[in-house]
Image 1: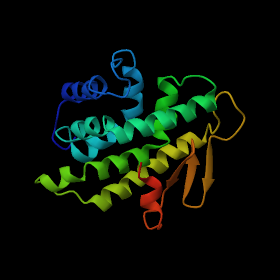
Image 2: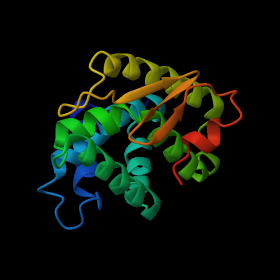
Image 3: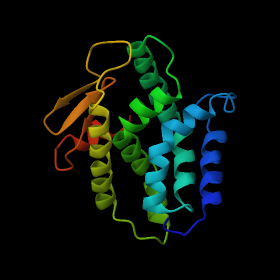
Image 4: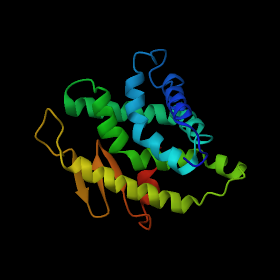
Length: 187
């Protein structure tokens, strides 16, 4: 951890992300595990990049934005249609949190760009995005081992050159591609 935060602080901040979440309205306690799994990979990655001082507040600010909430419910609905059931915490973490990791992190970074500009910390945005792409590639390789939704025989992830489609969301894994920003930015 960049700011040498201890494990207790790490878990406290992770709990804050769940209980401060407005994704499920007033039902944060009932659905905390879904929020936890949605952000499990993202939180660990963001802490490794930015430390415990900045990462949790960036996540909370973004997860409670109208833009993210609207997108999350749209993607969660798509996942529910694919599974033919309401997605549980495992499915949300697997297909949205891991499968759409790059899209969520890139959009969060763009949404919180002012945090970088106002802080005295020197973050290289492009280098962080490139590391995020590498992390997504690792997560994608794990997901491709079981590339089917539980209830169907159709592939969950459709690969194309420099990216893939999952839950009707396009992910471009090449930063130099002219559609990288438009494809990976939640709007």
